[in-house]
Image (tube, rainbow, N blue to C red; front, side, top):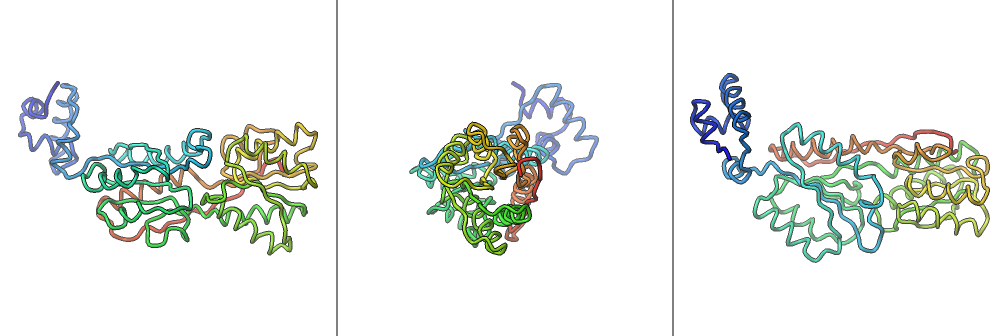
Length: 334
C-alpha cells in the first residue's frame, strides 16, 4: 500500500507539502495538481487517523436519528429520512466530509457514554441530531457544554438554548385546516402520530388553531405511529362511529392506509371523504386518488442542516436558529 512518503517522493516535494496539497492547504496550483496526479497513480488512500492528528479534524460528521422502543421505528418502516440524508450528503460530500449514519433509541442506556466519548475523543467534527420525541434528553447537556458542533432538527419551542432547524410543522397543520374550511368540510377528523412525537404535537397544534379560527371547535382524533398499517387501523376504528367528511393524517403513509380502508368500505375519496396527508413523500403520488399533502422540503432541510453544521465547524460562533416554511401541494384527494 502506498504511503504519503511515496507520493511526496514521486512528486518531488516534501511530505509536508504533499499533505497540504491533498488536504486543500496553501500550495500553488501546479504543485497541487502534480501531487494529486501522483497520488492517483499510486492509488494512495489517506490515513484518516494521521490526518486527524495533523489537522485536528476527523472529516467525519454524524447524522443521528433518535427513535423510541415504545413506537414503530420510522427509520425502518418509512422512507422519510432518506430525503433528509440525501440533502445532508449532497453538502458534506462537496466539502469532502464523510457521514456516519446512526440510529439510537432514547431509551438506550449507553447513549450518554457514547456522546461523551464522541465529544471527549474528537471522533467526530460535528453532529446532526433528529430527536423526534419530546422526552427527557440529558444527553443534550453534553452537547451544550461540550466542544462538539451540532445542530438539531427540532421545533423552536422545544429547542430553547440549542442550535436548531425548525420545519414549522405548526404552520403546516394550520394550512391544512384552512384548506378544509375553504372546501366546506365540517365533520373533520385527524389521525395523528404518537402523542410525544415533535411532528405530531406541532401539526395537531396548528391544525386545531386553524379550525378554531374557522369556527370549527371540535374534531375527532385517533393516534397512529406514522406507518401505513396504523393509518389503516385508525381509519377502521373511526368508521365505527359517525363518518367524517374530511380526515387529516399527520403523514402520507397513514393517509395511504386510511384511503385503503375507505376504499374497502366503499367510501369514495374525495366525494364522500376528503383525505389530506403530510410530508409530500413518494406515497402521495402513487396512491389513488393522488394525495393532497404538505411539503416540508425534506431535501432542502437536509442541505440546510449540513450547511449550518459545517459553518459551525469552521468557526461560526453564532447560534443556529433557522426555519423553513412548508407549503401545500394540492392533488385529487380533497
